[in-house]
Figure 1 (cartoon, rainbow, N blue to C red):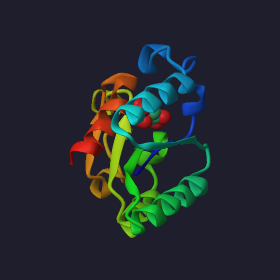
Figure 2 (cartoon, protein in one colour):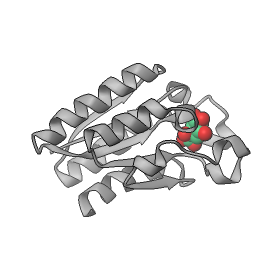
Figure 3 (cartoon, rainbow, N blue to C red):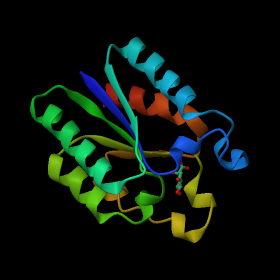
Length: 146
Ligand code: DQA
């Protein structure tokens, strides 16, 4: 089965972006962590990042087609700031029926009030936040267990 790990806006800047909040590891490092987790669990990995909301919607639909064929384990999604704004990503998650884990590197609940609300969370199977980039392999492991 395949795991999609999708990353939204500004996550291409990991490593240099507010390192006190997001740490020093780059998106390539995160991809490596995900690759190791998928190898351990015998999953195929699709790992992507986009700054464009519509492209993320398209990728959720692509995951949805695999889901319909029974070949998707699930989606790990760090939607970045779109978490807090996007009804479209909520609808795409609901509309495809995919199993999705919402992920944040930082503890959004310990930050600004505008990060406390998530449009995605009601459509997600679960949420992992505040555990740094270690949350990514944990989310993949969670997909194997649920
Ligand atoms: C983030 C938290 C969001 O509030 C923020 O907009 C991001 C990254 C995280 O991984 O902690 O871009 O999703």
